[in-house]
Amino acid sequence: MTRTCLLHQKAFRRMEDELRGYAAEVDFITMDDEGVFANGFTGEPVSQPVPDMVFGNTDFFFGPKVRAFFRFLIDLPDLDWFQSSAAGMDNETLQAVHAKARLYTTNHTQSEAMAEWAIWQALDWLKAGRQHRAQEKEAEWHRIYHRDFIGSKWLIVGYGAIGQAVARRVKALGGLVTGVRRSGGTDDYADAIVTPEEMGAALRDADITLLCLPHTPETENMADADFFAAMKDDAMFMNLGRGALVDEAALIAEMDRGKPAFAALDVTATEPLPEASPLWRHPNIAITPHDSSLTLGTFVRADETFLANLKRYLAGEELIHLAPK
Image (cartoon, rainbow, N blue to C red; front, top):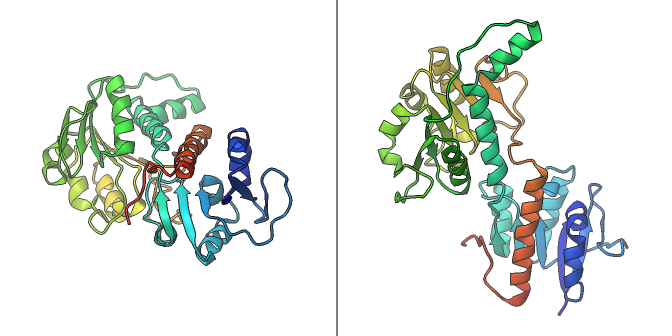
């Protein structure tokens, strides 16, 4: 029986050579940025596709027809397998797709680009990047005291794929890592692993604290006034998880009192971040628009995850990163 797979036109073009090997088993239908469906190989329009499989990736998620894409999925009579390029599904729409699909698989390869974001932000802060750039702009020559990366103490809250990818890089550069995860245990790239209940001492001692957690009722606003008050005056705070992890008003208030010294946020409670938000204008907060994973390598690695699972799916084998029901 021939299967039907829907994927974005851009993803199909990236993988066209590999997908030709499955052309006898799978009809590949694409959707473009105009919302038009077509046969991937021939380009012929397809009016009412009914896919068994869907590869939902960043081409869709950040594209102009994201709402139409998800409406199409929710309206399908059945969906056998959905491969997501995202690691989690705290988004309500993804939860609805998870409920519909018989099989739902995730992807964790975006952690590599996100880890590089964390190292970039940390190095820029430790090496007084903002101050140096300001001097350069004004053609001023004043030596600036800055800090070592080697020996810096990192607290990584949420020691999953992203946290581990960050830890590998931190250790390679000579930093010290304490990871926080519910199961505790050990890890080759962490000097210590503690549970959330045990992280108080590490928070007070950390030079850099990074959140990599999903948003759940338990983690919402976990970074509150008490959390920030416990940090060192000269510490840095970063969030790569979800904006809802942080009480943003408390962050600003505590920073105005002197700690943490700096914050870098790739996610915020409201996205896009409103122009009126004081986060934009705080002198010691760096904002990026939830794009830490937005690299060509992230697209390619997500494609590779899909291809690996497609091979397994067609062979009747267990899929990798299968989300439990």
